[in-house]
Length: 209
Image (tube, rainbow, N blue to C red):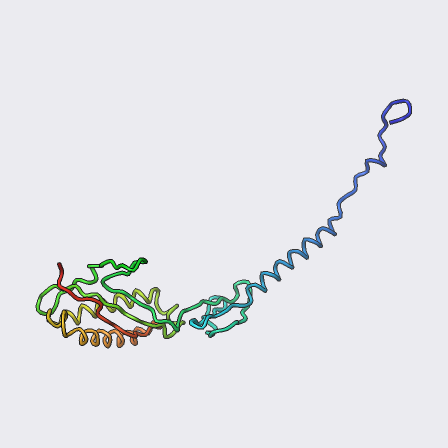
């Protein structure tokens, strides 16, 4: 504003100065590189529990199996570690399911079967198994646990179907358990899906109500 009260525009006071894009670009680049390095460092290591083994894949192909401890792997998904519980006894229930509150629910489609003398019985089995080969467990079958369940159910019906109702309900239980275990163990070896059978026990056996 001049002394006479009028306004005058001064180019020097309103000069536009471009932002320093080079400076900001360097900051953004450094921040991006720092973030990439951080993510890479976070994905370079993995820890395997004592009860586990890790199947390591490189671009989807199995390249290593590691035991307990801290291990290095290539970052950014180049290598991936798949944890498998190998040193653990796992259970499978046939004919019933244990609920979270400790009670059990009957599954009659699995427990009801016909004996060799044409009587109907309800037999519940408790099965223990372990993973013997983590690579085959992950890749030899789409669902190894379901394969094991179907295999046991088939052999249970086979063995009970050749036994009398009295043997199934009383003193023949031990023999039935041993037969089922031997048959399933042999077939599991042929299937070679990374599972080994540990124990088969008759949890309960009774005539249907």
